[in-house]
Image 1 (tube, helix red, strand yellow):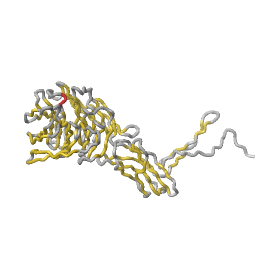
Image 2: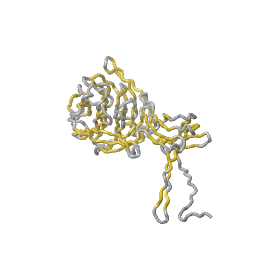
Image 3: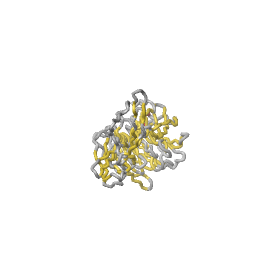
Image 4: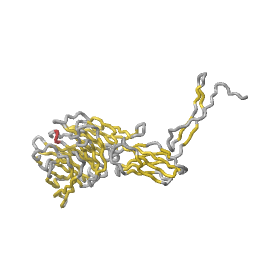
Length: 429
């Protein structure tokens, strides 16, 4: 009869159980020869039926994630979308019986944890084909880098917008006895090898503004704004309490930092004032010190004052809406009342924060959403203009009670947070 030549072995089959729907799999048999060496077969390519997961795109303004897949109308009778948030349970969040469907928009985003999506294809024969997972995340912590070492008991670091024309400009003002140091940073967003966003921070320069008589812990900074009349030569303002007990505000023109504006009145610091808070909006400069709010024109004099019921700690203004953080850790939204262009009063409304919250700083993104640095809960809270909670960003474990934050308000909406000791953490929306 027939015989099998020595050195050959008959192999029946191989069954692959680790298959992902919609993906192409390549197989090749490698024969190890008994006398040494090996032989390779031709490569066989197999495309697994079912929908292929394609991408997850982010919408930071509307806080939604859009998951896309390539439908497989040849086998699909329905699709099921499964989501896992952080280390939580994998759960079905969407189902459709449209074989041509290709997108699901997730608007139920409550934290900045990782969101992972898969699509499962149900076939007419009852089979379920699962895709590979795709992950995305809002306000991911991209980097934490030092500006310089700051001693919180006698020195202070404050952040603000550095460039409203291009993306990723931030200013960091370090105040110490008889010296102000202003750092200018530029941020660039790229992609790491795994496709995740990464960020590079470049030091543009350091200047030493000529305003060195401030008490170091009292100083604040208001950077350029997009609505300023001086956008060609943007201005920034620095405020603080002088050694003689008066409050001074100085305006500098970038990039040479010439002094171009001074406070038009004598302002004696209210009793107990330890810091001054600054904000800019629509050609107006808002300055809060203890129980007083002063409003100045960037091209003229005083345009109003208002008494504050509680000591102020930080302020941010967007489209005439004042967000005030008080020293007791609470937050109010204020609607200023103007008569013939002069501020006459402010109507305040409280913002509901979570239990154990203690706010220390506030800033706005380019869509008017407010971001509050919450030192009590070690997080940043994102709020709609009406105060509605949108999202909470978990922060690295540190003490933020002397911290600050800013959103660059350019295209990228980068969030910068400092714990007040010299390090700045950057979050990508």
